[in-house]
Length: 103
Image (cartoon, rainbow, N blue to C red; front, side, top):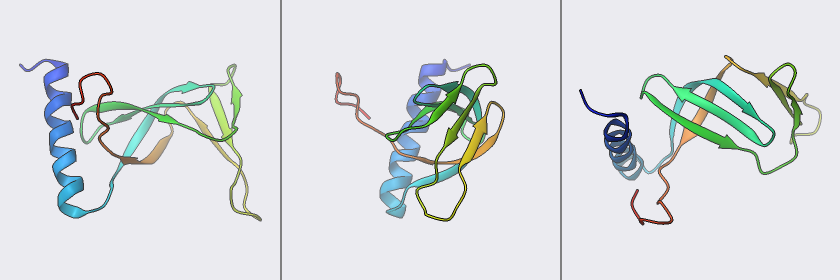
């Protein structure tokens, strides 16, 4: 059986080709597996990969309940609270590794 790094490498290649072919970001459903002060750890079960979602703006982090609250960027809409095991939709893109220039 292939190692985890090999699986992630080949899934990354497939995603990169899919992004270039469709000229759009790949969108998939994911489950929140970790909550951080500045983002989320997610698992994309369809692809078998984990990744990080980092927030560039301020969010409220509740370490006791493992939740984050994201304020709305659209006036008149409510904020969103996300917790561990919630299902979210993520945009997936492949970034080049800064050290190896691969990706």
